[in-house]
Image 1 (cartoon, rainbow, N blue to C red):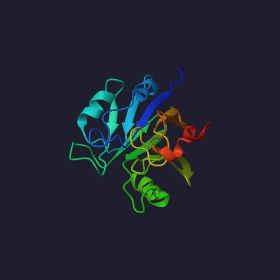
Image 2 (cartoon, helix red, strand yellow):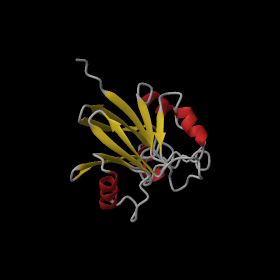
Image 3 (cartoon, rainbow, N blue to C red):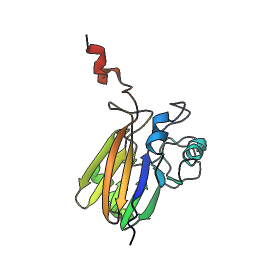
Image 4 (cartoon, rainbow, N blue to C red):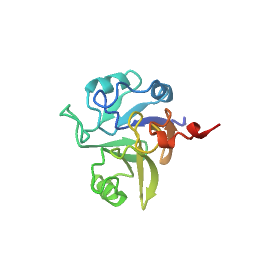
Length: 178
């Protein structure tokens, strides 16, 4: 029996064209071998999804900054023996893990992928794996990031991938080197 490992590219909070002009080219390099791409919202323009679909099929959800572009608030995706929930993660307080956990329970999923905070996260919260790819274009007090998710049956491996230099000058320590 052949073992098939599914590789998923995860992205969120691209905010194109209103806050950023384009997806960084490094994202396309990181995603070049993925089987599918999940976008956790704040897309803002359908052309972003069309560009990502040149790499692999895309599933996406509506974010709080998206005009109505035809996406649901959440999606449930079955991959091998794992059930993934995809949502933007608009909870209050922003990024509250307990609220995200409740959303995962509502969706009846093993993994909840969200965005909204613009900060990457991999955290096991009780029986749910909470994932956030961060933002490749508008990170908040962190590096621009996306995520790779490898699924082999029920085994899941998530990896945060840096796709650019910090946009916040306070995080760029190279300015202090002599």
